[in-house]
Image (cartoon, rainbow over all chains, first blue to last red; front, side, top):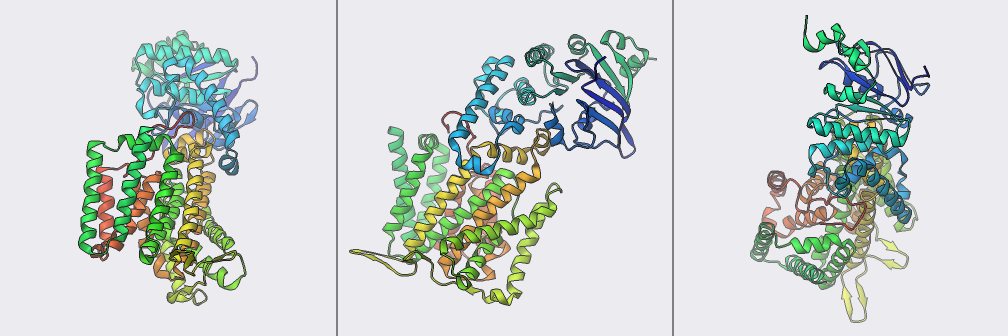
Length: 258
Length: 379
């Protein structure tokens, strides 16, 4: 086995008396899709928040591409090459779709005050280049949406907001993409289509690694080769979905079976 | 072409109205004019009569700015010997500049500044001290007013940048209250009596001499109006260029969603400081010019209540909207000065105005347009 892109050792995060992550060990191989499943409150989203630096870990270590990122701020984690979507859509609704995509590309844009105030010709060229790139990316997901990039994000339906959010995470060409329940608020077919589009981008980018939190098991079954099941912040099973879904502990955690 | 003609006609009407209002002296006439203004405003909103005008002006910003510039020049020339009216007009222009600065902080980055008048005052006092003690060219003194205000703001905000929520607002309130007390007890800055400023000069121009060039005679305020108009143009350019750039996108994101902003690599503290500093610089320059124009400054001019008026101008005009705050400034400054009956109750009136705005038109009089980085701006 090659060295994993992301590896966590004994990762722990507590909120008061609640242990959201309890000594979690987890590894993701480069260029793979890992499914992260588990009942509500099992620590899946907390895991994303700890990896991205929004919540500091209480104990344990996270290594990404060989370097420790455990105590980095969210900004530095993103620069290292990790991008994410959120469970509840976090688009800036009053801004245009294009602006929202550019939020995702922040680290590649020139933000010096003087440049933005004075070098308007160069800025205009940068904007046009970025517009073309954003349009191309959005086109993979939904061609009609690519023509509406100057409309406010508030005006598009939920499924398109999901697409924009995924594109916002993809546009900076991250090494690792964290998808937090992309199916929330979408029909089964819409979710499958979105996942197919994400896999298409993964092919194009070559080497993109994805961790997917998902409640729709058919989605997990279809797009992941390996998944990890969490319960009370601990890993209770790991492997292909077909194996994991037969595991008695997993069935009990999910369905409450004896 | 036709829509441009309509927009020009509209501007001419507004110009005539503003001229009438500035000119009028009897309270009855002023009351009638205000009623006409309110009625026209409501009518325009209800019937969407202004749609073509808004579209024309919105799609061609340069044209709109040219019209507004011309309108101010025409009004100033028409009132050339009316000192009081010109004083009011200059005051409106200067407060527009200050509110444009506040707009960068509040409207873009979401840093609430309840000490706008204090930073205006820092600029004013800097101008007063420098103009009397140092032999600096007065244009540099204006700049120095901006720099001091920017520095004061940065020092104030640095320690609390890591906190979230409303701490910054509380700190600015504390600063606003402290600043006035500090001025009142500080003898070097004139205490409660304040300081006088000498005449403003730029090159050979002496600002307090009346203007006479051949048959043309005018009030000395015309020079101040010219400088204020240049400042408005510069501040407008800075604010709108910031808005339509990567910086504008970053500031909006920091205001709307700090978690998303941080997750995509934005340094929130850096952007807040940047917006606060740029905004205070603009406010400080406006304060310095204001001090020169009035020729006398005192702690009373820079009270917390004045800061609240600045904020209410932003709310009334439409948060983040440069055109909106310009219109709101004209209303908020001119109304109590011309219609003296409400002078006593002006704070009550502004409070009511803000509440009514938030209730019935929360986007403000002229809502901020959507940023369109690519393609022509649409209304």
